[in-house]
Image (cartoon, rainbow over all chains, first blue to last red; front, top):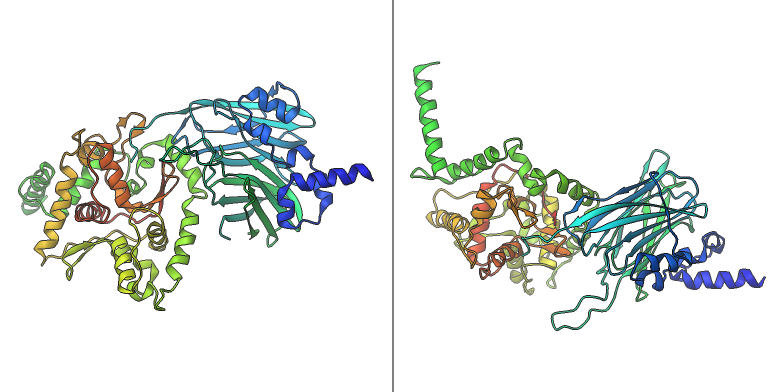
Length: 160
Length: 102
Length: 282
């Protein structure tokens, strides 16, 4: 069928890793939306949160603030080059988590696309250019939720 | 193994997978000592698989720290199962490793 | 209490006061005790053994971030590379084990030491290059890269051992090297006219801009170090150079006499503490 073939080809192209890994299990890739699995230059180069939203969701969506999202981030980053961030949520039906740093030149930092059995409990270490809100977006059942935390980034005195 | 190191541990009913990736994660915004821009060179996609089935993927931009770290939790794999984790970057370079669930 | 015991206790108290004031009866062991006491008094709720963790022993907020990084620290990649480097034979077929012996766990704890033949302080990094040159291999640069990775592998193998730097009693030259290192620590330098002790002793726990000054006690235990700022691994002498530049002093050369003597003094001050390298710092 035409639609499936096109989607399959686009998915394979979009997920460059597929060819690297020699994945033959195409069915599983089809369960993830095309946009999710591919690295989007437009989204990652967008210069504002609004533009990131448009790139990811086709409109400048306003997410619902949710207390069901636990965003772990320090109050004061020890070093802006390596800031440990964790995002966790027990909401049902989560398919994607997005981390944004509002004041970074390109706010979109990372996205996590949850597949079969994957829990909404991820962490990484990020760069922050200056004091900024870190925003965690959680996409669940077609709706968008968010939590944010302000992280201070200071200038140290002991370089060397 | 070079390029990525992973650990996987069963905790309760799910497996925590942690990985450390060797990568400069250049944003393309920095300049070298002569004032020439250092080209963007960063991981773009990470995939976690079990038995050829994708459990999770992540997309990183250059704002993820150098020598990136990722942790994920997945239900399904059992102790002794082998997982595969791999990354690819914007230049098409890649690395992958297998990790046994402990 | 017995009369003799009272006299002894009084004498020891007076001796302690003299040592603390840094006067006539100075011995390296006396120096070390006074040094350690300074910090355990200044940070009275922290046991001496904790000082090997630097600022993380005295600041809870940064400790949390450090522990998160230590969960899977970036230096693990360097340790793996270091292992490959260490196990690879030289062109002549020999390996590092021919210089350092087969027991990996004891190597780190042997350095720094007084090399009586060469009449200098021998450090681990210098010994690595001596081994290379003895086997017709080119020496490595001393601040980062392969030397740091080899050092990180050896440090990891030696973790948990007690620091035990020895100043041979029969060597006035060794004592002189120790004294030179000690003098370096307390001497002002650079445009900013600071000594190591100005920041890391008198002002330890205070801030310089947004950085907390770490106590000098425990400083050498965790090297080589992966610094977030460097985005990579570096040696102790790399850090010495950086610190000297911070006070706008011209740095001395890595593995030159000044820094090796400083390492000798600082490591001696850590005798009894645990080796915990390689480390992760900001």
